[in-house]
Image (cartoon, rainbow, N blue to C red; front, side, top):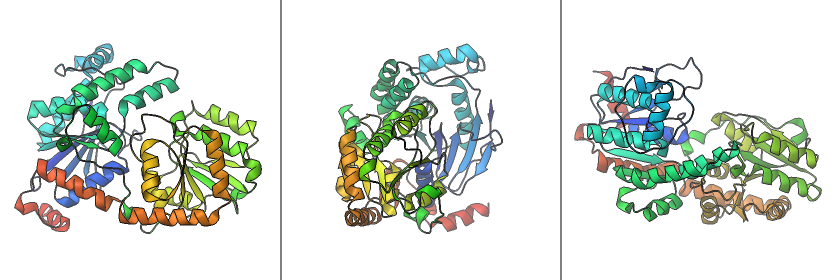
Length: 443
């Protein structure tokens, strides 16, 4: 196992984020806001996009270190912890330890090395799967722990295991036990939605222990987007229904969108369906079968994986953006892309799944259809196709809501307030970020 050397920042309060996934837009927003507020943010991630990724990298918003962990299959829930050792970092013993402890020994070793080098004053773990590790480290070092919960992880694990033909119920029960017994040990919790907040309160977690941090959009990031032509020739001058995001499992509802589109093609002769995002190989055959059944080959376009910088071009190409999620408990937060759809003044057709439906109603920026009801989805697609003035009105309403209420400049205030309660800033760091950077450079 290889871990990059981490150097402590001596001028600002230091926090260490632990991350088992790529640095996504939520983490970038949080790290940027905390850095600008006067904190020194370090991220330790076990994710490599490619083998040539450096072990250490200075990002605009944080210092990133990567832990090169030995590869073994699966994360298994459990509830207590053994000390790390080289023996437990290998093969069968490693998997047994993960089953019994919910902490991967090489991950623990990497985190200990980073803490010993960085000497952080606060730990911040992303997602439930790293909460047991965070609690163990918090107790060992006496550090406050922030648990940043992006999703309903027990339901998500069950959903993905079912996609691959496995029984996900036992895994779900174990992760639900992590929620009940380990998550409350965190010093502070950041739920991503009101629905998740309510769920945690039902588990007995007090409101004072939580701060709501939704996945709102950073307006500055999309202030001056470069819009490129992205539609295939057969989609030019068509009425485009679009979806931008992962197409990785049935809970995304793309199969329902294709069914509704296919069943109502005659009522929408000039319509086209743009699906922008990487498609899971296990899910793709189901989608291809629907396309073939309704002869949609010339009316549907899959882009494959697209970079976040390409989102504006694909959204701008649409007349209506669709969020067809199924009734799935894993969907506990409003997808960032809904805010981005509205930022580009696109009306949204969303399923009646809790957070998304609530957002459409609050923003008045679109239409809600009954989740998993193909006929209802089709009726609303036809109605929006035939009502361009209504679509324009919903798009304008949504854009206004995002610019005034549902954006990161509003959300970050609560995040920073929570951090200042947990890790107060000394007077010497209460200054503009540019001056802090100059002070560090002079050391």
